[in-house]
Length: 119
Image 1 (cartoon, rainbow, N blue to C red):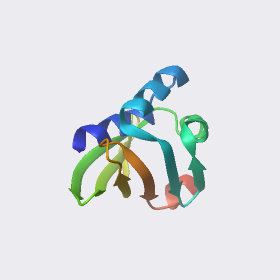
Image 2: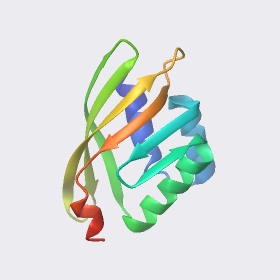
Image 3: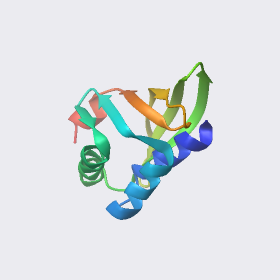
């Protein structure tokens, strides 16, 4: 399960949309739903567009998956957001459901809003 989360985390840093969509196909179900305190999206295109905005707001930032716990078609990932300039910026947690094919199907991110509000 950590490998799937690592691939998903990589997609947040991928600047080429074609490459990002290819990553999505390996780790996210086609009917992916994503929400966090700032956005609700559904589908590859909307999520990719949100990631583009993230990259413009926070260039050079990347997510590192620190720990994954999983059972009964659900999983929880603890992660760190890091920047090239400042190192670890903050930590968060994401919850997801897992499809029968092993890909993430419904992701909810939890993180402190203070860092984003300052941008």
